[in-house]
Length: 163
Image 1: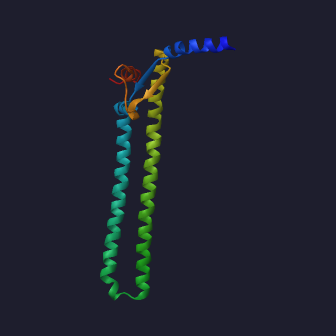
Image 2: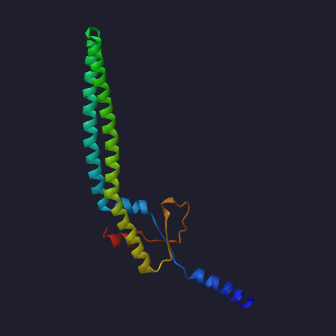
Image 3: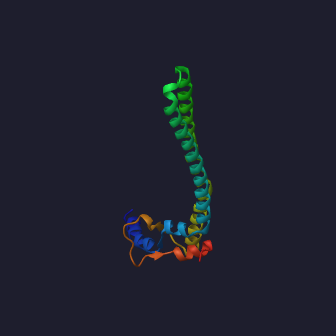
């Protein structure tokens, strides 16, 4: 038993020293990918379309509310109720449109960006496998990285076809 423990204790430093470590900044790498720019442009375009639609709906609401405010003194109670219900319905439509827009934009971000992120992670894995790294850390959230540590952003960019 003592011999086995002694052998493991002697082998442990050899096992640790055989491991290779590297790092890459995934946020920086992701931002460099051309597909991200294309996807972000598509998301921005969709967002602008929704923004225009909602602004148009809000302008229509403001116009209707101002009209109601101006004419309410001469309206009957039944006419006031109809107009108030119409204004309430318009508010609800604006709120629903806003929520739908937010959900649709979020879904499109997932649809467009998740495959790009997976491609990036696969390229990191490929470089790790080729270069024999045991661990590759994401240094975008690390506080300190030794100057002697290996940054693999260039080989990963090459794997992704980024210049």
